[in-house]
Length: 123
Image (cartoon, rainbow, N blue to C red; front, side):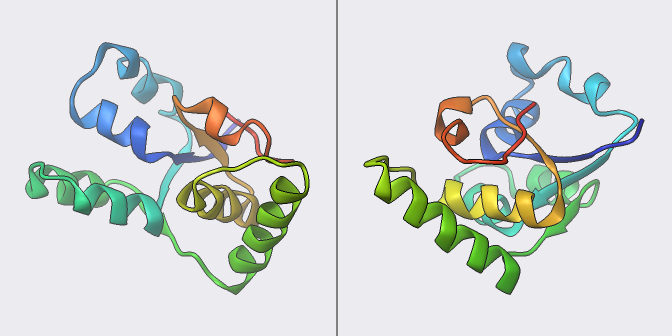
């Protein structure tokens, strides 16, 4: 069954660097529609890596925007985590909110960054 998979920044970097931990990712998601977020694209472009490789990868996936719905969900996530005394990097909250808005599964190696966010499905 085709799923909507959104790749977190760490996962994209691992794929681009041919890291061992990412070797099975392409096979796992071969039948799925693959996305990254504008936040992930921002984080990738900040790195001092091969921009051609980033552009090539970007052209193989869809990019999801941080829109008004995502902003509302992100603020709810932030408030919920804050009420529980938890902190998460705001960029991870943005990525999670985009995934929730678009009903995507998030493929990440940084599961601990997202495990306290209600409703997020991790791969």
